[in-house]
Image (tube, rainbow, N blue to C red; front, top):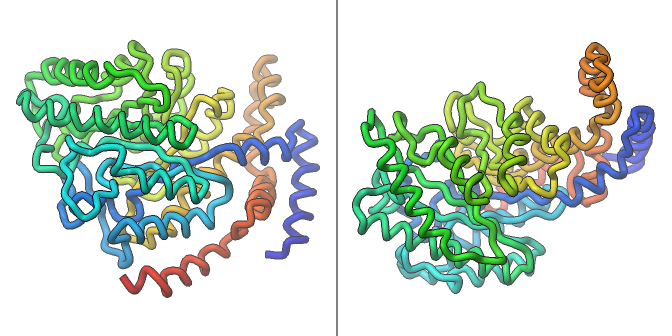
Length: 417
């Protein structure tokens, strides 16, 4: 796309926004500072390096068989770097525990250590990225339907030890990179059919969490992720939203809101202002559910727009961490990274460009017609010209030109796997 025309369109957009009191340069600078946490598991369909030939379990399912998925650590790293070359800004990488550098040896999950992730720390530093982390309770012989809430003390202790070690690894990452690593805890525990022991399992989970969080760290942040249901756990989820909201508010933990882990008609954006009053920070996993938590690629739809705008309206960019969490195996995986990341950024940009001062003045004066009218007209403001300038400033493809570049990478690299 012609650089001169991009700049001309941007100048016109800046003038238009200025009439509503919006400074586009300030919006661009704010967007530049937002780092998304990209999920490593999009590159290889959540296989990991512990046992790449193992089967997914614990409510995890990647659908599709598009050719070219990453088969090892080197390929995954190359794919991530290729994806980030099309995404403006500087971003983080979110690792699951099964993605350690195990040197071709089997290391069970209650034995993982920071040394298994040292090469990741070095690689991330060399490429200007920072790392976040996740414990991995699924796809293991001891996963079953219950892990941290398992009545079998031996199994429960195994997963407690695993999660403790994950926190230690996250601490090492944060110390190495000079920035806290966010460690997300999500378990699949639940029941396929009716249970008569809801309180019992939740008490076990609470006790497990208390033991896990007994050690305090300075270079990592804990977050706890709820889920409405999972495959094979449709009737009861131990770690429900109510459970983790209560635990997080009481114990000062970050609550993770995954956009696919609620009823489809439920507004995740509406939850932000409540959590910000009672929890220290919020972690978002941005996905796109279609009828269930199907982890479709994030797009610029109303749900994502509402979520992004609410972050800005709450002035909470310093308290809300934004990660992506989907794994579509039916399309080009690098393309999936790029579409979802850029869509999330576009939504955030529109939030930053919203004429919030004028809107709030209307609301304060009970000018509700004017408020609604401006909200509607704001949808037609030339935000896309500002987005093109953002891409240009970051030296990444403007518009749809990244499609051809990803096709070239597929022809030269991933199609040969």
